[in-house]
Length: 581
Image (cartoon, rainbow, N blue to C red; front, side, top):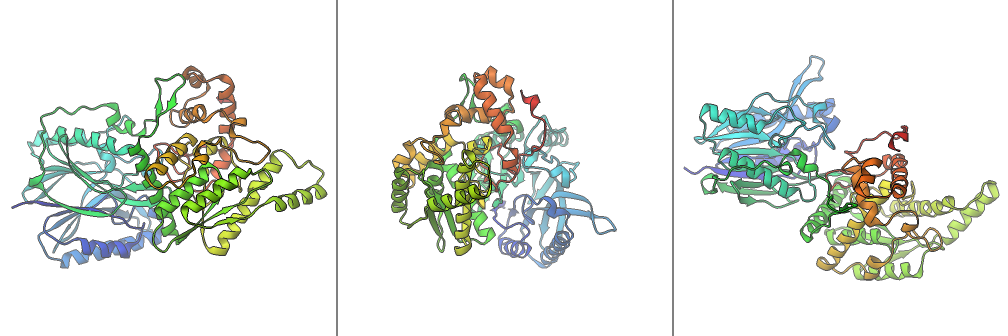
């Protein structure tokens, strides 16, 4: 008798217990072994929700409902489902929480099979704050076959973890003389550009090590900044037997007996196939100074889809159907607007508002008008010249301090932010931020001005990557962005003849330097050794270090890189900076 594997790559809102219960009941049909993602029953990441009494009470009630339903259910199916297991104090507060795999058996109920052994505690993860680690390897019997069980991080070897669950499982397999039919991993693994290959490489090593297929089931969803891409798969030796869609819920059925692969190769454990390899920065260190690696077309497509998915997830879960973008005639706002257009769904609409100042060039106006024609939308034209003048006059009459330089520049940006949110209040549209990662890193933005927005789409893309993605979008997804925008020099247009390069190093030098600081954690000494000049290093470090307060008050940033500003970046705002120099 064949053993059917039914893989459920699911997509739900966090803590939407009623919807998840109904979905579970509908999906648990058909003979075979149903496999769901990590923490399917709740969603992930949960953060302090797992500690709140209303959440705990609702979850336990719903878990009991699922247990009672399964006791009344019939069939020859079984299910492996990720969830939480609570041990409670007499006070009603949790004493111990574990991230577990439940077996669901019709006519019997739920059984806790396995607790996650490796609890990630880096970057966006803080599972050691909430969960207790499991202590034992788990083997699961179904239909006369034996399966090894893992949860997400358990597949990643690491120098930061005290144990390697794969190694321990393999030792136990050999000691007991077991023959595994497959290793099954229930995951909630966030998206990162180029992460797919690293997953495949690691899965290939595990499959070759155990001499059986490796089955990986991942969740789909956008949880504020963090994106889960799905991309579930089956690796049989060096053969990718099955790959599921990215950023879409999907169910696939495959017979275990139909999975074929050669297991004669010796697994090759390289640094890039371990946990540390997941966080390798995108720098070409052979160059002097280093350069930022250029995205391939495949990576551009992957990032574009991730950004659109993240924007739509944030909007739908926040109840927005309208989008509002401040168009400037520059690169960042043009790319954001193009992404909105490409990802627009039925029933949604978007608007561009152009707010030129006395310093805005006629070229910016022409480019903005051209882009809106290409998109087929009206350009709302709202000059700030007279508002700017009125504010300046009022301040000059009231205060004796001079009104020029940064004061004069920033008031223009803040006026635009005010107008943007006034329009948002009128229409109920969600304001989308247009800042990029280079600007965030050096504070090249105005607090409560061009830094406003509900969500940042480009906040994890350096300026050079914004240009690369724009070129790709134009070539492959509609020629929405005027070529003149892509070719013109970047400028905030807040003073006469202003260019970004007046205040910053060229982006082909700034961006790799910033990646070195953020991802490689380089300081002045290491940057000098890498080939950057002392003048530019001092300038950039000063800007970077003194901009923490701006980043701390910035909106959520869609995370598409291993190391990003936002949720996984935690640096004190108040500190002594002399140690850096």
